Image (cartoon, rainbow, N blue to C red; front, side, top):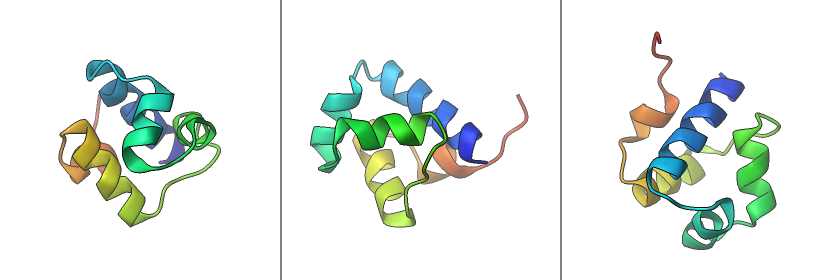
Length: 69
């Protein structure tokens, strides 16, 4: 799930035309944290994931659910 989450996060961030730094500023996290989430090195807690979803204007389930591609 970690890599899938990171791939989704990167997809929605790029769709909003935000850099990792810009997204980090919106949710008050450093760019390095956004990078680690996208690379699957770390995962956000549920509150952080909810803030990401709000910032990216997507449903939390869009970031978290396993969906067949």
